[in-house]
Length: 245
Figure (cartoon, one colour):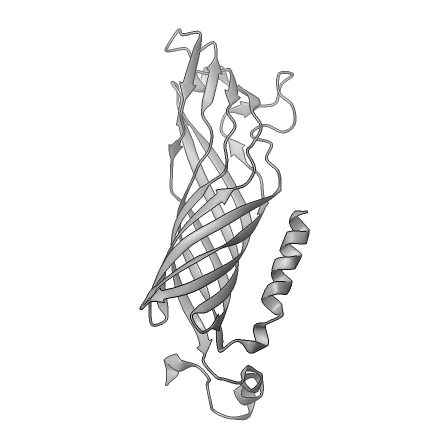
């Protein structure tokens, strides 16, 4: 189902591309925070002596980097992107900190509108392809199933909303990604002697991401006849690039 939605989104983008008034591409990069679930330590920790103890994650800064293509139709634009995203958090366990890390390839297809001046808003679906997700100190034992650490779906779907502030060819992008699926609760087995907790439940959560990025247009054209760009690029000294005028 996710791949059908992705295919439909790509087709909707590709069909009107020759009617665009301008198009371009660029690069982007920045920082992010990622929401994950609490950990409930069964039987508490070495330091507390309580029956159970709850540890909430501490958000650390992750990063993302990628590229985008944009097609402009007056005030409306379509912008597909390809990004690499690395995110992390940690839990302050009694003995030492346990880091939580994950990475993914992110493919959002965004539709935006220029509100006024340098400000525009956008929304659109995103498709995530996750790599490994790990928590320090988790061991594979008879109490757990699968690989050590969270067993997340490798392919997920989210919805992106955001706002951009652009000056000439440089801009700032503030974005919120809303995960559409909640993870399942999992039983994890930590190395008690190292971290002070043993069997613990990783509570369900929706993988929401807040990010702040800087983007730069490497190329942009406002030629009325986009087809002539490719021939003009090699047959004359015309750049079709407003930043080199």
